[in-house]
Amino acid sequence: MKHRYLKNVTTLNFDTKRCVGCGRCCEVCPHGVFEMDGKARIVDRDACMECGACAMNCPVKAIKVKAGTGCAAAIIMSWFTGKEPTCGCFDDDDGACCG
Image 1 (cartoon, rainbow, N blue to C red):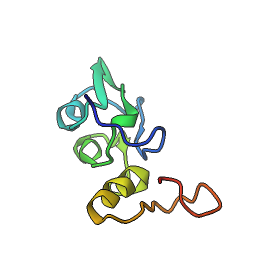
Image 2 (cartoon, one colour; image 1 turned 90 degrees about the vertical axis):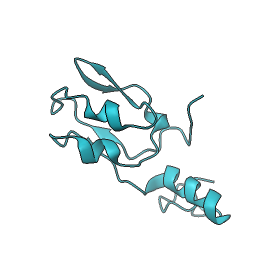
Image 3 (cartoon, rainbow, N blue to C red; image 1 turned 135 degrees about the vertical axis):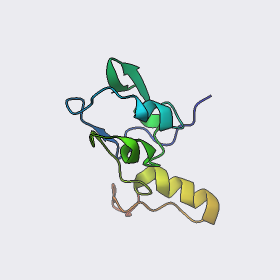
Image 4 (cartoon, one colour; image 1 turned 30 degrees about the horizontal axis):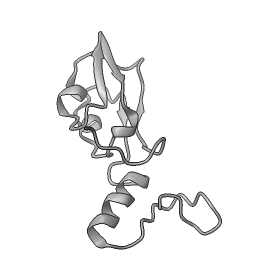
């Protein structure tokens, strides 16, 4: 079973036009977010934990992700700290979106 954090909140961005099909993103992604089909493609965006391995290993900078930020990181940190998650994106009136 794959891990899921929150739907549609990852900071992951992928520029398919820049991709050269090297497959490094598939090799380094711990959650199978990418798949090769001639070039890489995102097959499971919501499994992204924003670790940044894909972006750091992409030789053409086709992938961008704000590692350690966003709702997924906030939820993970809340597990370790026991505090309410805060990601800073302020989706509603009480100032939280990832709880």
